[in-house]
Image 1 (cartoon, one colour):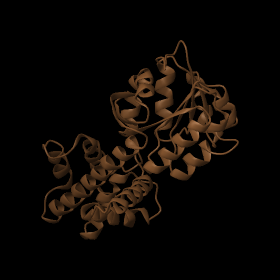
Image 2 (cartoon, rainbow, N blue to C red):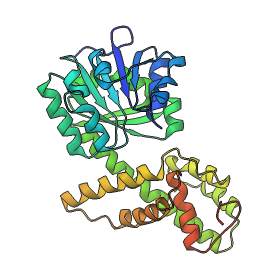
Image 3 (tube, rainbow, N blue to C red):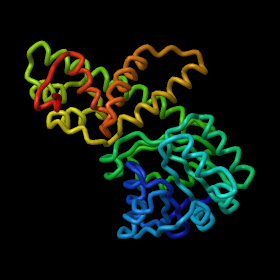
Image 4 (tube, rainbow, N blue to C red):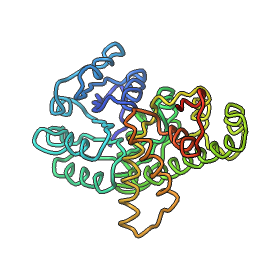
Length: 305
């Protein structure tokens, strides 16, 4: 497959959500012709001012593009978009490429690859590590699974949206790597939440505690911004609790199928689930609030009642 370039290839993008919007915008800024679709048409139309073209169906999009990218919230959404007579794969041009960037179970990625092969379409699972600010700056990290030649051909796309990108292996490898990474992401956030609650309960000033933690070597880069936002009581979603919750489910499914015990992940999930049950659209870092609540702490700064 020849390299995919703005001069020679037209892209389509399905799913203009928390991550899809900034990724699609980066592709437009890189000079790619981009057609977009979202069930909520207003989300897609927001990209018109950046040069995007909006269509009314997935079939219309995939039949007119050389590469179709998707970034969707669940396995069900991915399969609904790509499978069936009106789906992306059945209507894609033979020889075209589908790049699914959604966080899904590896078997879902493998299913897309199988269906794609029936229609003469290559499929890559290229999953994302990074939040919306990283996507806006083109500083994501990507994990790829599928045909290595296709992955290499798609590198101009990856360079437009990511700081680093890695090929992991055959179909499903990118999806698997994402679940490994998100297990660590969720556990790390839980560890921070517990530590913050402990420090506060012991009498440390909350703001100073969060500030000093951000300068230590033990806090991962992915969590630094969460500490800074927590100082301000800002838990507006960059990576929503509900999506972290969904990813925990995928992680447990994979672990169960392989006979791997994950006690720390289980603890992180339980706290996430309790905070999610409140029904608010919050960032996954809001587990800090949940651990403060369990420690019987409350302050205006933390946003607790």
